[in-house]
Image 1 (cartoon, rainbow, N blue to C red):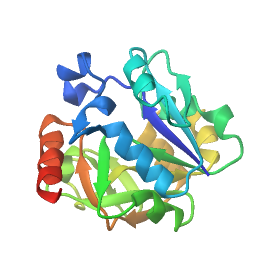
Image 2: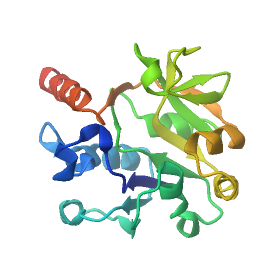
Image 3: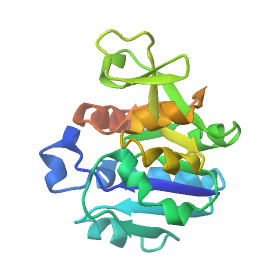
Image 4: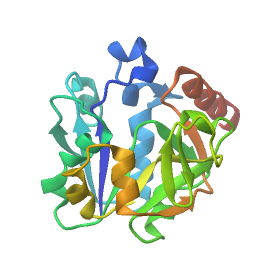
Length: 212
């Protein structure tokens, strides 16, 4: 099984700190975000991991030098779907996991939850402020709706098929690609944290302090 970790974006929700430190290298306890994601994937039995990196990720590569990881440079960030499309030749004809660096999970393994389902599938969690996320209703995603029809939102883990790349040829929007692909919604039993915002990162660290 293969997994892709997109790490080539601008991390606008974490500005200005993300100008100096990539969001995937921000600390949760004594480890950076990326470390938790790789551990999650490996514990789920993932044997091949590709990190799609942007410029200025030398520190990330140095930190992960003892991990068996493949890297591919995404020279210009053009959104999540375009980022994933850079992995097309590496994926080949296999189904694959996509793990965003915006979410970290505890008390369970979300990748295992997805792999126990059928591809394509999208992991979801309930939140109090769904209008800030991609809301899932009737197995369709609406990005940041002003009047959400559900409090169930996509939470950064996807189990996709190679058909995704064919759809991408016609539409570059991640949400549109997922909706056209069609997917099963898997509500996670794991505890999900949004580490892509300063407050979310604070909440995650606070949880770590109390847990350990």
